[in-house]
Amino acid sequence: MISKVKILILAVSLALLVLGISISSFCLIALSTASDGYPVYFKDKATAVVVSESMFPTLKVGDHVMIERLDKTDKLSVGDVYVYAKDDILVIHRLVAEYYNEDTKETLYVFKGDNNNYCDIPVKKESIIAKATGVT
Image 1 (tube, rainbow, N blue to C red):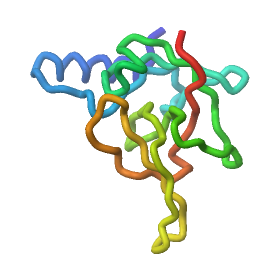
Image 2 (spheres, helix red, strand yellow):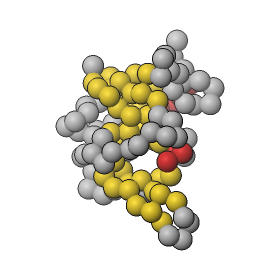
Image 3 (tube, helix red, strand yellow):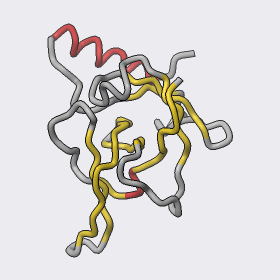
Image 4 (tube, rainbow, N blue to C red):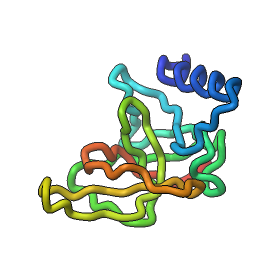
């Protein structure tokens, strides 16, 4: 059964394609989700389907990406690919930097799609929900 999130992502993608608008700045993924919009995991693992080109050539539209849930104690590594929540969507991009913000006294993480010219807006660790572990 297709979840509401998958239907919404597919509908938005189709509408943008019909209008000729590119959605490649964020690599959106479609997941089996719970009512809160987050992935449904089986033994801390889930599979995501890539629906944009921002991670091309590493990830292509239609690729199935295996992801593993993160917890607060997991250390993140620059160069690895993670899933993070941005507003009400899930994005899968490569971690390119982390830094400590002296003003807010917190560490922020900077992501970038392999096919994008610019980095994403930095996010807090609480927004990073999973690590990509492979492609099937």
